[in-house]
Length: 108
View 1 (cartoon, helix red, strand yellow):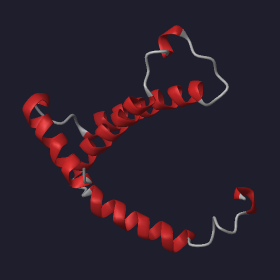
View 2: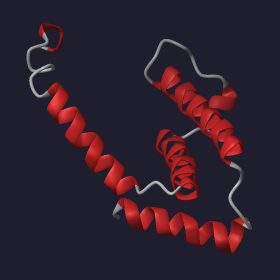
View 3: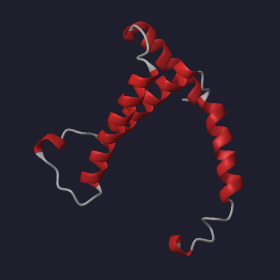
């Protein structure tokens, strides 16, 4: 699915089931919360922390999708075209880092 279609799908869902978008500030707080939940899963799955019983039902992919959902909501309500923004960002990274990582001895 293209990012533009993801944005349209989220918008359709909000208008059908969500009544309206939460405010930008509320969505920023929710995004922070969702990133924290993702960090918790990563810390327990790949890091040194052991899992508690309450951690066992968390799913890495679902937590990533939650982050994406809120980010798409914020893009929709602020008029950001994520496809265009992503393409521009990739070009910036490519121009800036064309040889930076290739020459990084720490990565070899």
